[in-house]
Length: 96
Image (cartoon, rainbow, N blue to C red; front, side, top):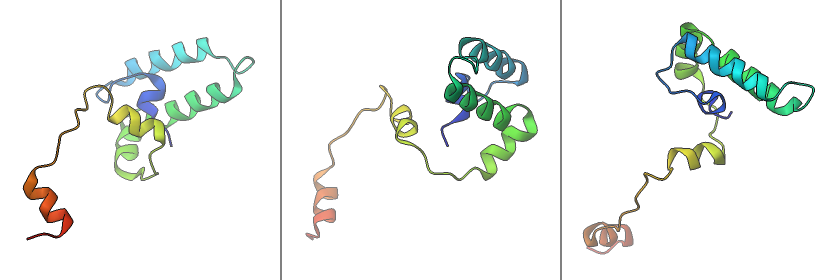
């Protein structure tokens, strides 16, 4: 499942009012008559996190595999690859 916070464009710390406002804005941008698929994804995302109880349940029990989009967002522009140390390379290669 795609991250509902990303679908609605809200922060993980967003409250009920912010989530509802983002939901209504997203619905106005893509009504079901124009973009049925986007409408359904927005509706599903909102239902997953519409109140505090559902947000907690989502955090605790949603163990679906992340999509490629989720992974790319997680490693966004602030990701800086680092070269492995010589010690780590030797350990990975099996040298002592």
